[in-house]
Figure 1 (cartoon, rainbow, N blue to C red):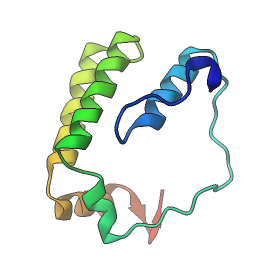
Figure 2: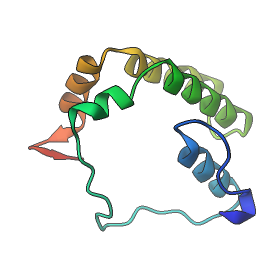
Figure 3: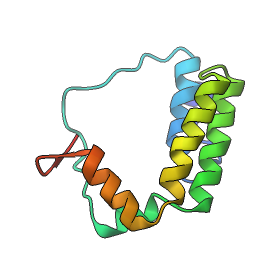
Length: 109
């Protein structure tokens, strides 16, 4: 983490940028089979996951991914389109999408 400069300023998405830089720097990365975080889903979650500020950070991150050749221009357009719809939708619509596509049998995936 220190070798790639640690955290840098990217409001609300600092982790993603750090992970990208670590990956490009040669860090070994993998998913663990253990549950390390108990992610509580409440009504405030859906308000925090949207808005212009978060969408602007998403846009900056996705541009960086193209510049660093982590994704293609086509992938950029797809990601920005998907995230734009999600980030700029009203909170109730994000809640509905979360329940439809992420939640399974009362548990999150």
